[in-house]
Length: 138
Image (tube, rainbow, N blue to C red; front, side, top):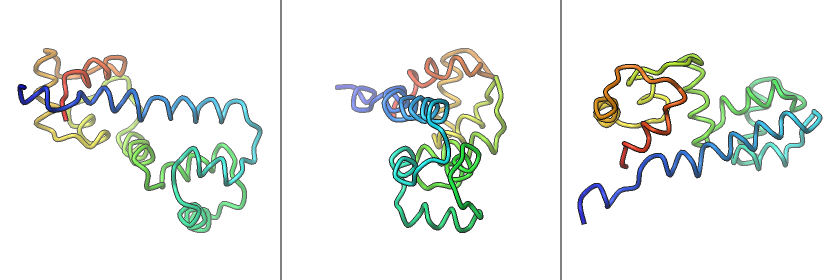
């Protein structure tokens, strides 16, 4: 078995852990009337009740609306929340530098640079993230 075969492509993690949850949150926010329940927020963001209470208190949130949901998500401790926060910090963009992808998805920069080189690009359109992730084994 080669070294690469021992690892899974990051694409698997992205498709199984990140994309479905983002779609679920998007659908929820678009179809459910606010205010949202704490139970739904906890389930979607995979954070503890204690963390939710702390975030609501810290950010002066009395009811969970679509706007306050995003504040909670940005400050939550779950992996998806951290990716969301780093994405916002780097700015929503159509093109990503290797450094942006490395930071947002918490992947070593050398691994990202190697994947960019394999694709022959220096900037990556957001629509090609899955292609990039298929070249990254972690």
